[in-house]
Amino acid sequence: MQVVLTEDVKGLGRSGDLVKVADGYARNYLLPRHLATPATEGTLRDRAAQRAMADRQRARELESAKALAERMVDLVITVDVKAGETGRLFGAVTAQDVSTALEAALDERIDKRKIVLGEPIKHVGQHTIEVRLGQGVSATVTLTVRPVRETGGS
Image 1 (cartoon, rainbow, N blue to C red):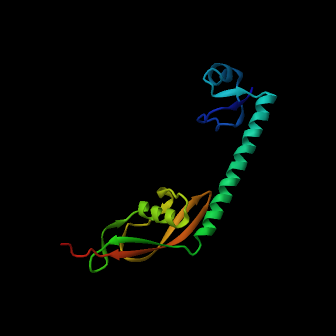
Image 2: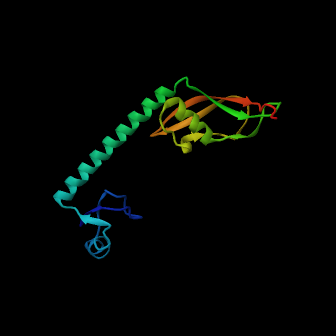
Image 3: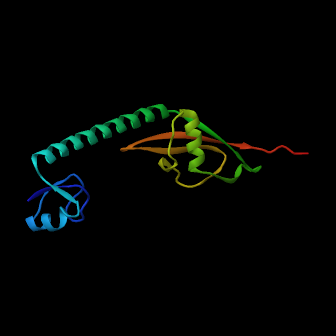
């Protein structure tokens, strides 16, 4: 019997896959647990429509990621942090700090998990940061870390 999986089934396939299974396995396990539906003409048509819609969504996301990567070409962002006399930071520049600076520069939300920091940034100066935008698209941004010295208070 041929069925269309509605959920991922370990050892059988992923959601949306058309698989051939034994009649008893389908009737007694897959169908009662709503893990699959019988492969009728209607379900096959629905499956094709869902795949086409998913392909269009992936294409839109890819175009969006490429457009954002184009905007990031030669982008230099700046983060002001407290630093000592030697240029060593009192803390570290995190992915969240970079994300905030990118959002201010691009006026678009960038998830901090997309920012790749090889190691924590603990010195002032220029650093190269990779931003993975998804679907194999990444961009490189230059980060300038500037020291902010506190002025003597009262």
